Image 1 (cartoon, rainbow, N blue to C red):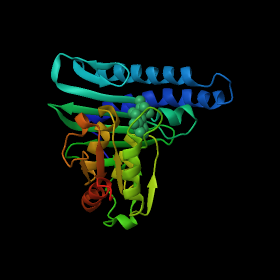
Image 2 (cartoon, helix red, strand yellow):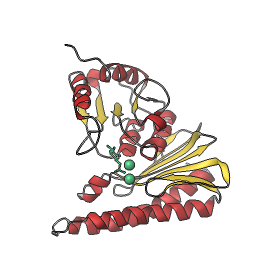
Image 3 (cartoon, rainbow, N blue to C red):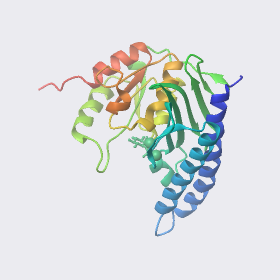
Image 4 (tube, rainbow, N blue to C red):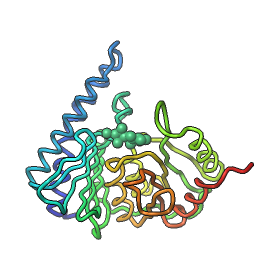
Length: 265
Ligand code: IPD
Ligand code: CA
Ligand code: CA
């Protein structure tokens, strides 16, 4: 499969950062048993990966703006293009030696997501998509799953935790969903969750309280794999709102209805 010059640039940045993360991940696994734990080491690994991605992308496409988790917004001379980057998505997994984390890079052109790369370096799984060009896992073309009933579906989600999210509301959503589906999963990396929907591994996914860098690349992966993505009101303000719900057309529709079902008295 021939990749475009743009996707090559993004893949190169993701893979270089991935090599750095995998080296640090090895050390993090050793540090689990130390009293201090791997906390500082992980923050450094995260920042190092972001540096690599920033350097690679700035060299290949000078002047493009950035929105990065650690650095925040970086203006560019080119006001048409913006990279949206999470250098390490799944930090808690990384910190605990769980090999489920990813680098997520998206490119926006005039406010529209036109390219996305999500890379899990521990499993060497590379997801790529370009607007109008389809979505791929390594060299394999992706298609969302075909299951049309919630009762057959495995649904991914994000869980609020210490200091994050509205726990009571989430429990209502989870209760609504778990009685209707074949299984619920919580993987801990939103970009990979969305990539799993694109790959047909998850039939659907929902989460609130996310940031643009968690989801920008994954949104395009799902669309290019023939899936549906919206915010939790059914609109397209995912990046602004931070909520997302995804699946194939019937699962997206049914899941949105189920998740947001009002609590019966
Ligand atoms: C987190 C992961 C996680 C999601 C959190 C995100 P981070 O990103 O994507 O799955 O539930 O809301 O903040 O902090 O590991 O980059
Ligand atoms: Ca993230
Ligand atoms: Ca992150």
